[in-house]
Image 1 (cartoon, rainbow, N blue to C red):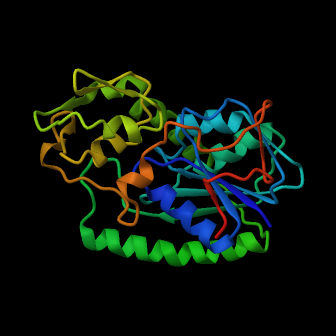
Image 2 (image 1 turned 120 degrees about the vertical axis):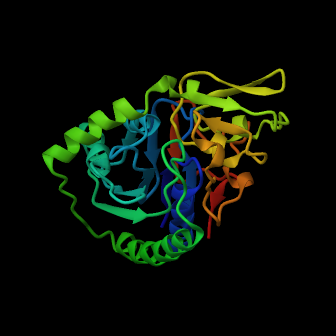
Image 3 (image 1 turned 45 degrees about the vertical axis):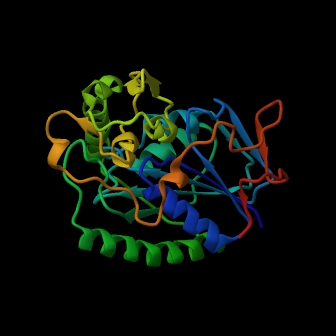
Length: 282
């Protein structure tokens, strides 16, 4: 039984969950949501489809929203969504469902997993003990969720109307596309280009050995968190703040390959019959 999971990740939280789900479910294809994906995607040949995204101010990343707006799925496909967050998912599940409902796609089950906060543009990372506790508990919770998914079970989420409104407004205010103007580079930068290689939005170019942001930022913080020299700062507050990425996810796991990491045919159909080196049959 084949499963396809799309995931958006910056510093590895959502990827870690997607990867564990793939291991638990078996015969699963993982595809990362990046700017390289086509605008329209028709999914065929899969029994189950999962969407794994982080909560952004109680909603989901804009790139993930645009991806969902171009999704087509067989009517019989079992669809589930997963939200990773640092406390409360807000209206994230509602955001996924609202878009997919408009596409005629029903989400049968949804799951929320609390993982260490990774928005170090606003606050310091949690201490290492708290990080370890959250990561360990999430592994237990993901195993339980995988059992529900195997059985094609259902769950319900009913966010309050106020939460939906607040989350929608907060995302617009707190994550403007030009917020990357607050990133800067210190003299520690060696021009390695990792910041550009891990950016899911393709928002960074290396010019004269230094990164330049192109003002279509998703604020995933991958560039800042994964810089091996800690040479990227956001505003004036982050100089003395720590950095975070999921402890079980390496920088190499988060580098986006030059080639497309999925197989599509001429009409952008992604099929469970496709065989490629990125498919995880575990």
